[in-house]
Image (cartoon, rainbow, N blue to C red; front, side):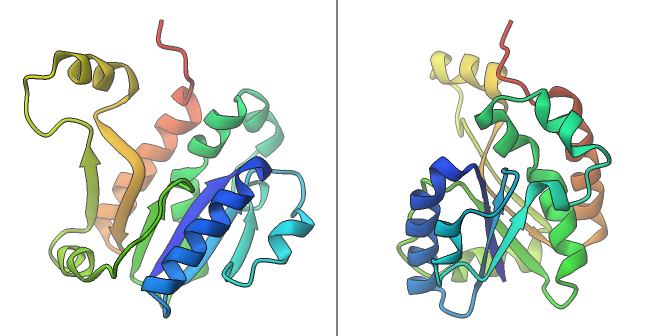
Length: 180
């Protein structure tokens, strides 16, 4: 399994904490960081829990500078996620399970249940709302998306590839914090 996060340099300490928690609970898991920066910062190189550091500009965007110029710092870290998964699927052909976690997450236990679910389902997402009734959360979901993509798990599959292609296109064109 590969656990990945995407960040700008200001989130390196959070990513380090996430990586430490992943390695504590899942020591055999590879932890990969995608930096939405021009270069790899020295601090990132000093984190032994990072098994891989990838620059977003190197994950397969046709014109990364043009793409990234259109985004704020938070939008940029979000906008690269689907392309990052596509890159990981190609770079790690021996791996079947990939999990994205936002850098402000802390892992407290193993992923046994998640791994069992990935056998049954090629894509696992978390909705923002589980039951109707909280109108503020329902309206927020309409503005920010139905799913909380601070977590996403996929199993290598045709269905996951189709989803990533669909999602990558939408992130490329529409990943803006511009509710109006």
